[in-house]
Image 1 (cartoon, rainbow, N blue to C red):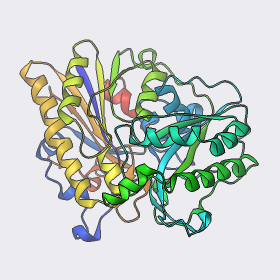
Image 2 (cartoon, helix red, strand yellow):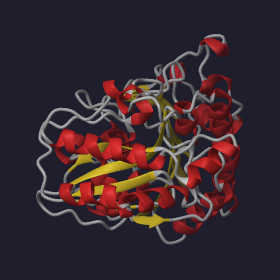
Image 3 (cartoon, rainbow, N blue to C red):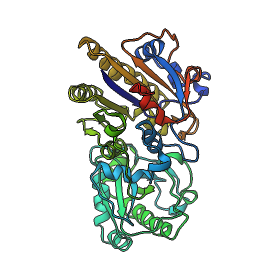
Image 4 (spheres, rainbow, N blue to C red):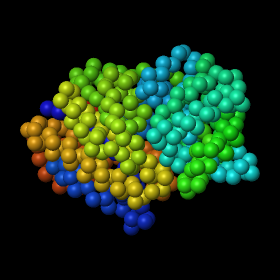
Length: 411
C-alpha cells in the first residue's frame, strides 16, 4: 500500500460574485478529482487552530501531524530549517520578501502602499541579486551589522533573515500578501523595541533599491520593480515530532516552497527538489509527478504541494487560480493515479487545500476546507463532486492533526 498527499495551496474559497456565486473549485474542470470524490470519502477539516492567524505554516504543520499549540514558534524558523540554517537560543528568523511598494520616490516611505508581496513575481535568482546588493551596500550593511542581521537568499522572492541575540517578545509583523493595496504606515513592525530596528532597515532598503538597474530594466519591460524588502513570519528555533515515529511510515515531500521543505526536514521526511518547480501557476508539474512516483519506489508516503492557486489569489488572478486547480487535476492527480493503477499498486490518496485563500480580499481564511480520502480498493459511491459545500456534507475533523491517522487507517 502506498500513501499520497496532494495539497492545492489556497485553492478553497468562498463564493465569488464574478462566478455567479460559485467558487473556483465549483467552476473548474477537474473531472478526475471529482471522480475520486464520488468514489471516496469527502468531508471538511479545520487545519488552522483557533487563536492562530490563518496561513500555510500552521495549516500544513497540522496536516503533517504537528500540533501548532505545542510545536509552532513562527513560520520563518521552518523555512530556515529548509536551508539548513541553525538557530541558536536567542536568535530570531524572519521571512525577508522582495516586495513592490508604490513606485514613486517622491512619496515618503510610510505613505507608500504595498503593491506586490513578491516583487512582481521574482524567481530564478532574480531576488538574489537584489538582496545580495542590499546587504553588501555600505549604508545598509552598517544598519544590518548593528542589528546583528544577515540574510540567506533563495532563488525566488522568499529569503530568510536571521538576527542574533534579539528579544522579539511582543513583536507584530504583517504578512505582505494579506495587505495588498494598504498603506505601509498601517503595517509597519510594532510591539517591541526591535520593531524600530526592522522599520529602519525596510525604509533604507526602499531608498537603495528604488533606482537599482535591475528595477529600471523591470520597469522598461512593463513589470513591477522589486523596490523594497518586507520582514514577517518572525520566530525562534523550531522542533517537530518525527513522522516515522508517529506513523511508522517513511516519506518524502515534493514542493517548491521552503516552508514545506522545512517541515519535511524537521519531521525527518526526505526533501525532493524538482528543477523548474517555481511555486507559481507555471511550474514543472510533470517533473513533480515523476519525482513523486520515484519517491514511492523507496518510501511508503509522498506529499506533493502546489502553491499556484494561493499565489494567483494573492495577485488577484481569478482566471489563473481556476487554471491552477485544473492543472492540479489533469497534470498531477490524474497521472499519479493512472501510473499507480498501471503498476497494480494499491494506494490511498488525501487531497485538500491547506486553508482558504479568498478572491474577495486576496487574503487567507481559517475556515474549514474540503478534503478527499480515496482508497483504490474501495468504492463508497458517495456521488459528490469536490467542493467546499459538498465537503460540509461529509465527516468533519475539528483538527487537521486527525487527517494523517485517517490516511494511514490508524483511527
